[in-house]
Image (cartoon, rainbow, N blue to C red; front, side, top):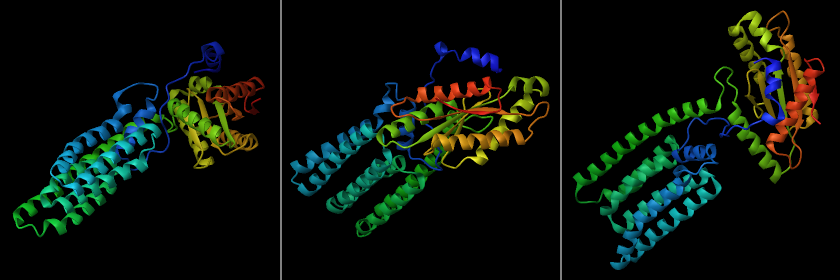
Length: 364
């Protein structure tokens, strides 16, 4: 997209926002509950059943255990009944916690411990005939935890059950229970590992630009919102660089679109090699990029912007003429919205273009 075309599109009356999606580094492994957190953050403006998943799971678990608690008390099994009540309370409390805070890591481990501990207490107090509770617990921990963590919990659960199961007079039943638990854990791990790989791929596709590997506009907007929210709680400097490749349409016209794509990739690589691991880069338009510098002042942002501008020019990506960039830099102001922050950097970038391109300008 050429400069003139983009300047027309950037008329203030035509500005629109794009729905946000959660971004950030994709972990090697995630639990099912962490994936729920990603989905609901990506669709936080939508009212869907996904948003109530932890509460649904908590209610389901509580409703599943409550009838047994009632029966325990009716039969005079007070200790096991109290254990069941504790499990019900734990389910509801942690479910509400996740719903309210969207912070799933602590709740995931706590729920896994609650399920595992509850099953073990039930078996130790109620006898080996209560071992069937271990099966739903195994399925639950493979949903709540990362695959390798779930394996540790499953193995620990089975080892902890051995002192109760081995003395059982029916050795065939004991062997059957242990084998079926191992088989269930194996299938649960395989399913969890496969879905984990698919999950990483889908998140990457949803948040990254295929050509350059930078984040896309959706992931940028979510990250901007996160930084603004964090700044409101604990003011700390953050700066934003918005840069555009000068006369990029001319590169495509003279050298072809394949070379234009290569220029975009190489510019992104130059920036990626220079910025810190805590900084992040996003491609938000045809030849426009944003770099977020958390914890950096305007002065630091201007210094980095000048370094990036000089590096791009010095690399001689194409000749006739050399590839250059125009950069606008803005530091987040107190009480400023994400859109206003980005708009000020955008205005500064176009001021750099107006002044002759291949330069850096600070936002007002």
